[in-house]
Length: 245
Image (cartoon, rainbow, N blue to C red; front, side, top):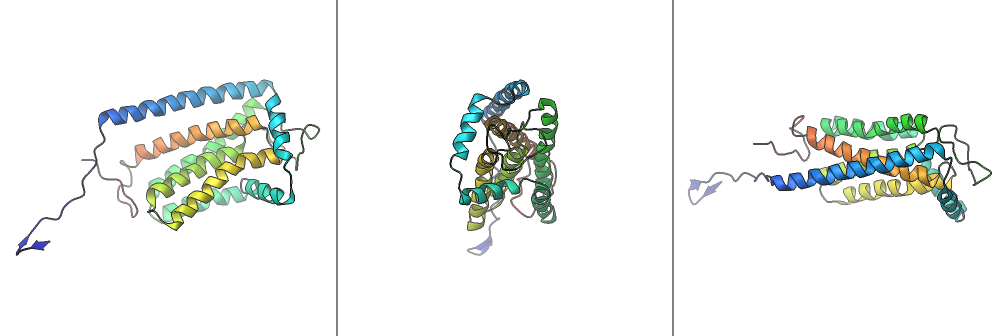
């Protein structure tokens, strides 16, 4: 820039260096969350293995289904419909492909990592082998043949959609587009659990176990993303990380 006949050097953006104490504090919080969430999920999974349902499951399901109405039927069915094959596959593939094509290769990789949580959920189902809610106990809108704990719909919504919300918040500037994405994704996460209970496809404990495991996988995905972004694909068209000095 030329000022009063001479050229001044352009100011470079300051690189914010995080204090080591702050990094250590964040690490302790993350480790504590992982330990607590893991212990809670394991305890719930072991208990679910020996019990087809808990008393609270019946209470919650009957309370949720007591609000049955045509309008609520449509909403709950639509929310759950998103989590079934083949639409869930498109819901995963399209955003990942879009990120990759936009040049956000590491974001696409981390999003794929987030989606892997559902595969782990399927493996856990095979170990816990908990049956679905029975029609003689609650209203079952349609029969599902797979095991019940944890809910794959809720796990995917929490881990994968949660990471998409994280990317939208961190990569997009404040705008109506970002706000709309966050609201839609947030509603999907919040409503997925009640929809599975309302339809009689899962018990309350199945849903809560999925929320816990999904939150744990989301935290691990975010750690994976933050670990790899300074190392891979540093030059990106949107919100690049500052290169470490």
